[in-house]
Length: 511
Image 1: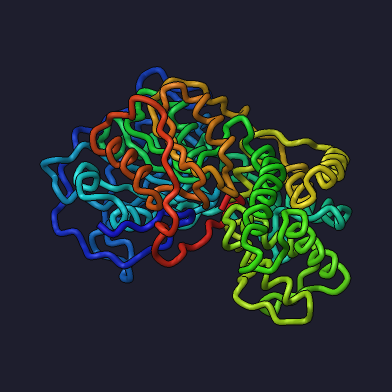
Image 2: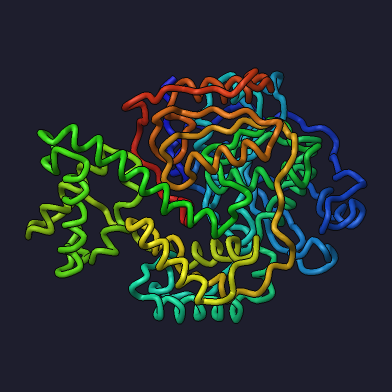
């Protein structure tokens, strides 16, 4: 089977419709009488858990086999009789009802990534022996897409979350302005757009589908959502595959700050690799020379902006553009060659500066990263951290530690979720991942003591499933049989195995 990588956020590909009808599901299962902390009792949630989804075709431009419905969930689980919001869900039925094991929920990342069409992506990715075991279930998390959205009314200039130290005073004003706009436009909704509440929505979905347990595939931010679900509903978690994992103790400022030291490690590896190929790239025959070539480009861009695909970039802009690239050494070498030519007066094309995310993307992302856990309230904390980290980690330290709207956000309505359980799960991780580094996957593995971890040695890129046969085999076997590997697994990277056109980038900051 020709496998394609599942890279957050997933693009929708054309699929042939599945002919068989959905298998009948068992009688509706409700949450246990002992509800998890901060939520309502099972009795109070029965109006939600006993809903019967009304399935319809999702849209004319997607395969008819993908069916969509809308559930109601409480805005505030502490007050289930209060305001209700929509949860948009989708389903693609098993191709072999007689072999059906249950449902496989999924989340593509973000935070803020819509997931309604993810079953189509999974249908094209999963082997037959896995597909026939599940109905594939997607959903737009609360605040996102066709679920009740959150909107802050942000301008295009607002929609960049990580900013360099050199504009710190402007950054503070921007962060306060974004927080004020969000509070003004969505103040009643905003405190409840959190990972914990999305996990609770998943459990309402489970019950409405008539399932006693759910299996799950989550990538990037989706691993955080999956881990929180296992903590809140450990008895409801069946087979969980967590791809490119978030460290729950770093949610969320710590996840951004870890990018700085990890980018330095990736840069050093890249400089060594590129020096060994000086005949190809001409950036220097030693790591020090290669490093100097790059920083010369940054210095020249600060004096005279480098025009990349028609966009003028100063040194900070160039650093932000290429930070991820250094985790994939060949791509970084090719990009830096183009940037060097542009800094010398040439025209840099084909580097594709990322478009700022949309207003709705940033609104939903900000709600989650600011609402899941408390952030420092004093802007001077961010200035101090940025100055120190810019010196320690010059490639990205000032960006990663900079002030964000969370500094001016209302305090979260619940404490951060502490993940510490023995729920079985499979964590899959590339060694060189720009968004969720290896250390964050290892941290989640420690906190989920029933998990096994598959590490792709020298694996590059964000999102493993579909890029490495060894890792795919472990995940496929687990999803098909429910049996985890007897011990942690190390796979060798498979150069060139990542196939197919690149997927759409996730709107959320984790990408």
